[in-house]
View 1: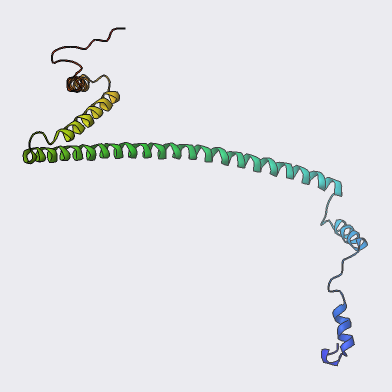
View 2 (view 1 turned 90 degrees about the vertical axis):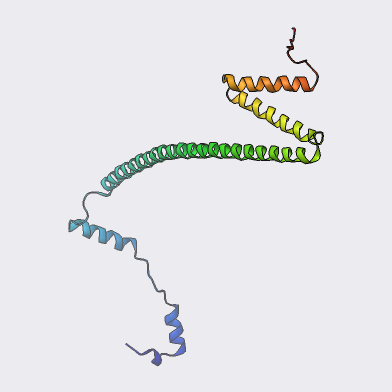
Length: 184
């Protein structure tokens, strides 16, 4: 073997142009397969191998479809269960938040009424009328919503009736002790 330094530039270019890989011929492939079959490394005709491979492919495909479908079913079941639990947790949290908001609003309402009472004592009896009307309207609205929430509670209905009677008297619709009757 010669050293690369002994080559002329033309020879180097010729070596570089030579293909690095060569594709074996079909004849060589057939001879290798025949030799492997003769030695018992490859068995059976080529058509039998295709038949076995097609059944293996069908079996593998069926197994993968069963696994995929099972995974979907289990995932759907677990997802539905966890989604239901999450929904119930959010709903419970929302009801707790609503109860907290009602408590805060009620406390703010009572504090505002206390401020209105303080104004009444300093400004005189006629100066707090607008605040009193707003407080009565808010109380009536709260009683009405409470009656919608529990329509069978007699105490809530009685409070609502008292407030409606008061509102009717304030607006001049009825006199104390009289009842309004609507005829159809």
